[in-house]
Image (cartoon, rainbow, N blue to C red; front, side, top):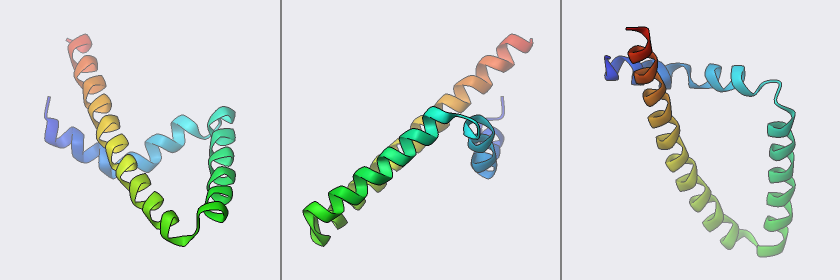
Length: 85
């Protein structure tokens, strides 16, 4: 498997991949709405300085999740390649 090509494809098509998988997922959309409501409440409670720190932490968490998702995608591509032989 050409890992570099698969990685490039993943990052070039990430938005489309996620939209196809989650577009009709009611649970996912409900969780997004809960997250937004919780963030609004938290920001009102803690103030701007702490909110900025929270956003930094959230960005790091998102980067970690992206690394995990890429690894899962590549593992799936490897499994698919093995099963196709």
